[in-house]
Amino acid sequence: MGIKKTIAKFCEDMSLVMKGAFDFKSKSTTFLKKEAYDAQDNFILLCFGDLLGLPLPTSYYTIELLPYLAEDLEAWERRMIRRNEIWQEKWAEFDFFG
Image (cartoon, rainbow, N blue to C red; front, side):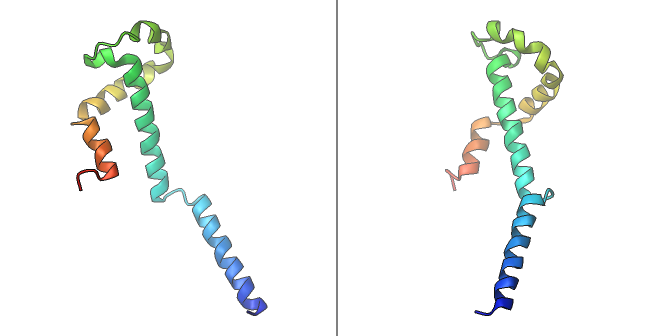
């Protein structure tokens, strides 16, 4: 293998690394944002599920988090109401029914 081929291979590999590290319009960024919203939604559901009619005994203790999460509650309620079935969404990601 010649030096030119080695340098060309190295440059190609480095361009792929840079593309993967700095390509912010890719599918992975969208996936990460969706996962972050899902994690936040699940956390708020555990803390303030009584706003949706789920009787949770932890709401008494998590009310102290309300000032920090108040801005996100309205958008969270809209996202949770739009969901048809939370379990169905998660199972579809893992292709249990495919």
